[in-house]
Image (cartoon, rainbow, N blue to C red):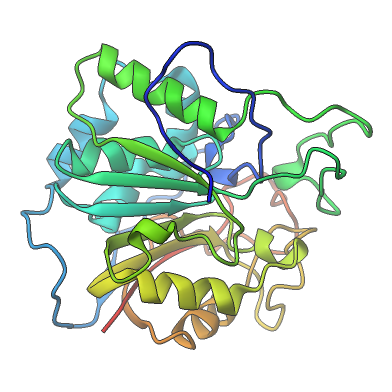
Length: 308
């Protein structure tokens, strides 16, 4: 199983990129979100995962404001509201974390800063066969222009992008966790080193819907994540909300998934819903287009599940 601990030695290897996480793309800022009262609904559950003190909202805000973060990440901040999102995720110092579908590493880097040098962050993306054509959805994410047919595969893959993030944080003196990149299929995304109840947290940011159009065995994926988490470990998923009754059928066109459909799939693996965050909700989004018309933020949900 290809695993790369991201310490730069000599020239970077050229690794083809897998699916690039929607959350990691540098995107233009959206119009301001409507003001809402942030609400989190929780369910009581006992936990045997690590019990280090959680970061406060102020500590997360300080991480997000770190001057060494890139301009591209700050652009994504306008869409992702990382102080709300990462406070909700709740990663704690010393935790062992897996970021599924790392893409460009936007979430991975924030997690590394949160869990600190006593923690560990695994970043997963699927390996790509350089001899196979790049799989593309019927419509590009967010109305972006489709890539020209026949374009060569990118020569800088996730491992190199993540290594650059690690190098930059180290150069800035940031006390971040080591990041290990794992090239693994999405339906079995857990590195064997942490596959047996060794993880405290798994995140999957704005890509669960993509697993519809690329035909991932999501039931197998969720079972693998369940097995890898400690009792009390959490699984946080954020995605673009679809209309009732659409399930995952619009994953490659509108890039949306029905929230209740996703919840049913995850709970079928043994998870219990622990909390819901509404800080990315937009009830005015008709949810009938990839990019809402009139232009406004997409309605997005964030769910936190727990392994009992």
